[in-house]
Length: 464
Image (cartoon, rainbow, N blue to C red):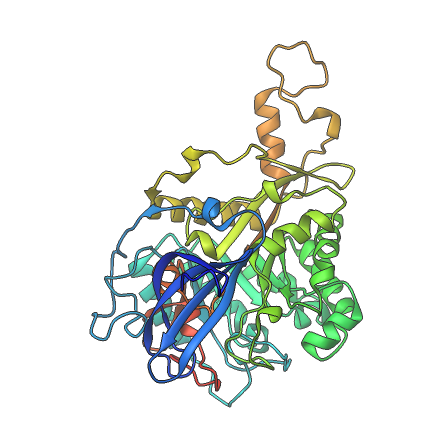
């Protein structure tokens, strides 16, 4: 792996992964190949595999952030076969639960080309309310302060969704979010209000682009108009909306900036955009090559290139909760001119690289998600680009006092983030052990998202 003839640089670090064919654990190496960072592994039965995991700036080395690991307070699974075969969580896990996904149906009213959960692939009865209450109780015993995301399948196909939301609030969860394609929200008058009355905090809305072709390619039909109506109705009901584009190279990677611009114009109804570069698990149409992937640095670069300089790649930071290779985030102020100004624009320093407690990062993220993704009050202060400086007795009559600035900052935040989920080709068990997004299994265990949805090269699931 280190010969000049092959053009391979010395490997950067070692981890563990799985063989995409048999899903057996194998050693893996993060290797620099030219400008790219790849994950390389070899199964004794099925041969060698190489997948790009990082392409572009910021550099892979500068982005990595160490944390002091923390064991979950309650582990529902003993370690017998090892990671990732004993997820539940087990005592080898290194992070607490930030968000728990409760999947209330396998049914769906779409048949998308890409689907993490392979929704609608087979008929399965919906879990009853007793089962869902049991799931809530299992999450509460482990992480009573975590955020809840109700997912599926498509949760809105259940007519008792308002009761399920109420149940979560009754169990003590402060922030309950709905993961949805938005069809029912856009098509049924009064539905968003019923969900709000039940206690819903936020809508995590599938929103892949701003053209008919994008939705036709990814979802099988032009859904832009119904998505727009869904946002309007959520706004009228007082629900915060986060746009969630699945980014697929060659399909909608040129609409990354356009989605952000659309979201900013829809502020305060839209509180942010959360990009999900395509990963090949659940249901997908092909076996991926490197050209079929879009890495986190490429998303950051596209945001800079496609927003006319409004956003810069340097605005983004590694996560404080999950593994640094899993995501990025930034918070912006929305000005009256529908422009974004970063809340933090200082360069990252060596101090950013010092280890800190993983659970501290998780608790900060729980609070930030609830604050930044929920609805704003009916009235919120306006802001002018001339008034972004803080008055520090400098004589600037246009500057705000500190309290006023902080109040504006709290009420004018627009978040942009991305989460790179893993599949059988690029799975890194270090990232998996650092996962903070956990799916509640049928028997009440908490399984990291990428393990729960993982499928091998033939589409066979590890857990589902």
